[in-house]
Image (cartoon, rainbow, N blue to C red; front, side, top):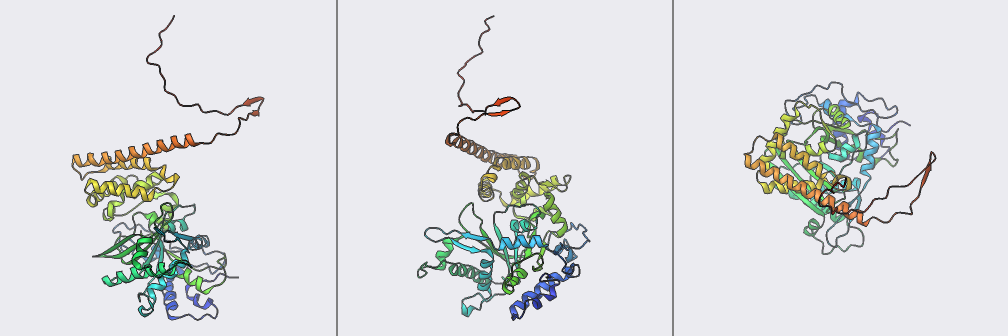
Length: 463
């Protein structure tokens, strides 16, 4: 059996006798345009779908905008292999828990179903309770996209989704908000009384963050679902235009989901090695192969960090503490100075810096493994700020360094207190057992209780 799609044009013909409506045809046409640059490089449907990208990979470091870094659009795109599509399918079938505040129930829904419901609400005619907006495409972004493309396990905290819509007027922002809240209302479990539930109460219960940006070159909004720390939040981003879509090359990947969603609608068979849709990935960094190489080798690379809000400083130190290395060690000090300068432009006041740091630690260091890196992270941040800050007055620089030191001291004390508590609460182990080997008996080491030495001085020599 050949795989479902050997070339983008054959997609609608492989769906049997199912009727393809105008909306589906539009999505197929969009996928054809995305796949066109890679279609001629397909392997003809034999075996898996190799990671087809162009071989022309020149480094263009002139600009960080979407098209300026990569004049040839083929460099930005790649077709996912079967293993990558399989991991993407696993992510889309993952059950997401959207926890509600108060008495509101937790919403348990597969990610693919959530995407389908939100898209339906956006595209449905207003007379039928929808927003009447056109969704150009839907993409998976952020850590989840890196997880799909990486060869090794790549942990991720949130599920980031991008809906490409038109936000030319303020009214469209309200339509997007109403569509998301309407989707949450439809996803409420059976048995929940919906008579007194309003969109305002749904927002308070399930939405943890809402952001609206509407200025020159940037028109987008963000709605973050989920209020439980330690669980993955779902971040729905609705983008008309965005000047800067990435911080570093390793987080620049976007995976177009339209072909996979269409596969779910058309096919009753599961995804297999010889039967899976063509899925296109894009790196907004500019060069897909280069960004993928950085992801696999754990390398840090970016362009024009002074154009990132916050300069990417906190993310940069987070990558360092997770054993990432600069791709250009000789150039990284220059980039660090740009990062620090932009960070202090965006957060000039010491109270703003404290709030930003505390919020970043709370959101990005979740779980025992991550929390164990907090102290090391703060010390790395202290080192970068101390060595690379050139835009602050002396007293301002000392204030910021003192702030980081105080936060590091608090984290260190909390870690020591937690270790002491764990040691005191540790259950008594089983009876001592001896191990016989090579003619000797070995006894386990028994930890002794801590005590304070009462010796005040050296003992006098009696000789």
